[in-house]
Image 1 (cartoon, chains in turn red, orange):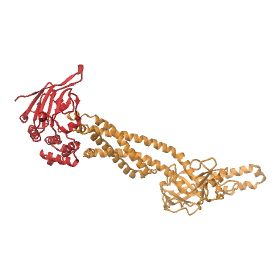
Image 2 (cartoon, helix red, strand yellow):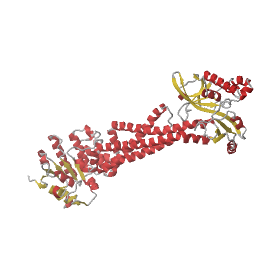
Image 3 (cartoon, helix red, strand yellow):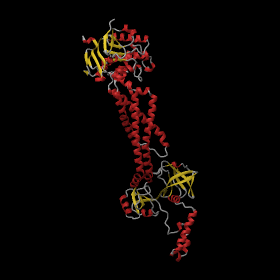
Image 4 (cartoon, one colour):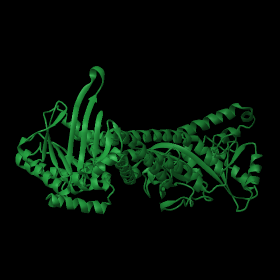
Length: 231
Length: 403
């Protein structure tokens, strides 16, 4: 059933330019991620991973193909069937290669702002943000600015922010690239545990081959095409 | 959560420096209107305080505040005969530049018709009014003189017996008050040799005239002091100021004087307007234009500062957009920072102005109306100057947060 899938991307194609300047960034990319499932997307640089992520992230619509989130068709080619900004706010969470926290907000406020943007009252948002930071073992660092946190701690705060609005899908673009292998693995495990606990679908774009055992499914992308890797 | 305040707190040092810069710029704008108010206040203080209802001045002139005016001293006796006139005071007004203790001393000399007018209407800050017809003066503190000080003007020494504050002429010079006689003496001070030469010249003129030939004793008589020679008029004053009794008919008094063909007559308000429309008007226009320029410059500088502050936050703005922030959240962030910057700059401008303006050579008067007007201008500048930053922020693609 559709509703069991956090995200379904079918036959995504992305073409930039036209005629002689035409560049096909993504040829045929399909992926289904069930609720509570953690999948990895591997592939060399320039294979189209980021294009795929921005497409399913509703930031950069595909030229053709369909995207369903929580069973609802939101993009049919370039045509948006919902208010993308609102939908993104409600159903999607992002984690980046760098922690990408807002530098002038504390750890707590970085999580809180995501909730406030989604309509939570300030008090309610603060309470929920603190709960999330607790869950990620960051409660004692809640008042610290990002510059006072280590790379791993920053990434935990970024994950807390991504989870804040209980999204259907979390999209993570090389979230462990700036971390050492030990921390990197811990972050991947964190994704898995949170996905299983919260029922969130997680797509992690990664180059890190050492933590692949953490994922429920592994996809590989090459020349704009996604394939499911067999174990 | 107020993102604008959070960002400012994070970059507090930069914000303070920027606010001080904006504040100093606004202080100059504030000072400009204050200088204008000061010029008006200084120029009209004398007319407003001297307590006259009617000014009689030289025929076809607009009075001593607009141009040179000379009327005979005995005009005041004629004016006293007009029904309703309580006092008629001779008034002398001229500017001199002398040296005192090796320093340049420039002052506007105002003659008071002692004993009718001993200066009791002056806002004395210390000392007393004029007690005698000669050798006393009341000086404004801007002249740098002090109570009891004696200064040499011409052949005579004058003692400062009273001090005033803020009694400045339209030209910006401090005013010193003397009796009419002393004021004329200062104005017409002639060296002894020049007096002797004039007397000899006068005797020769009489001797060569038919009158001198018929009455030789007139030759000796004509070489006496000028005041002893009835044919010579006494020195002229600048104007005669009339004060009417309560309920007296001003229009009727003016109509009577208008019939005199040797003088012109104006009300105090008309004399005030001559002053304002004359020397002060150009200063007003000049300061007004300068103020407009400064306001535009402030707006441009604020716009550039806000634009730069926005550029520094582009990544955070992209991130906010990526997590679903509406344009209103972004717009609010920039607009609030612009308003906070404008408000802080305005407060700094006011605080600095209060400390600095009193040290200016001319009075800077900050009126509530001007403060409110500037507050409104700052509000408008803050909003308008934030447009560039807002425009830039709205162009940001959430995609940029991924880079």
